[in-house]
Length: 184
Image (cartoon, rainbow, N blue to C red):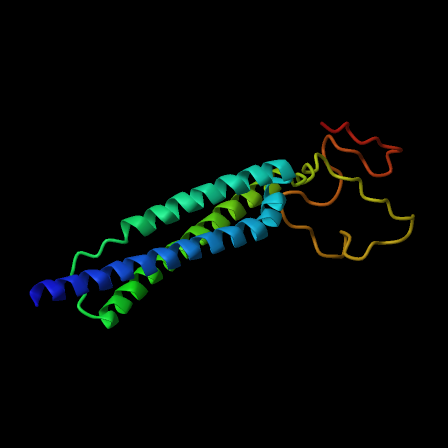
């Protein structure tokens, strides 16, 4: 009787392993194909070159298979005896759930890393802001007899480091045509 019971335990455990491998390998292949097919467009946007995107896509698929199938085979072992089919189902669901979590984590890591690479590439390709101004433009002179609103004598006085008015070394209002200094 004891030998028969041990043989039944082994059969349930073997069937649990077979189902685990079939489901895990099937999920890995399905996810890898879906990511490869749908990720191609994203990779072309990231790398801006179709040939490079295809090469990276192939390398990502190979790495995905290696990491995932490696995890599936390492996580397959179950040291405790399996006494019933319900216990086998519970263990099977735990193992397949862990495989799905690893698949999802790998997917989000790839998307995060490629998105970061894309942002850096776009930042490098972005046009740089214009140079800061070197000098000040001359103020237009007022026609004789008119007073600008807020101009000095009766209006508010300017505050800050550079009051309005003639600047030393700069163009003088009414001093004739001026030329802007050459830019660097």
